[in-house]
Length: 216
Image (tube, rainbow, N blue to C red; front, side, top):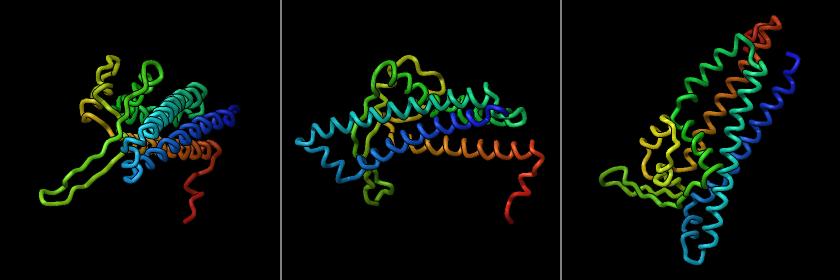
């Protein structure tokens, strides 16, 4: 593989950009979901601070979505078009992408949200306090944080079928922190698997049994 170094470097750079944007967005959303911070932002005299928080959430979400699907494009180019994955590894990679991403409602919703955010408008986020009673006589379980307002998003006509399924299954809003954490976890799992398989594939083609390198 004469171009292995630059291909792996390019993929790692795209992953780094995605992971960094995801980490920054998660860190802000965690701060904004703190009860004391949330209540402080609801005060009349904190209106400017609340507007600034909304603007920062939108900015980081924009960066996150752009890097998420830049990663998709980079991965397709270096793994498939530039042959980073060998003929023995490529079918397994393509099957995993097909099964876990190609028709997945959450992935397709985020893909549509990227197009909506980059080319149409910033999605509406709302600071929301929720109280839920988990048992008939139990205490109220409260949570707060920034939610995506799905009501405004549903009016956009360009959602594809899996994304519309995601929207149909959701309520009026969706917790942005939970959504980002879930997608981050899936991306981490995918590329941890891919780089492990890439290493094993390279060892096999060099005539080395990967199992022989496992320390008992």
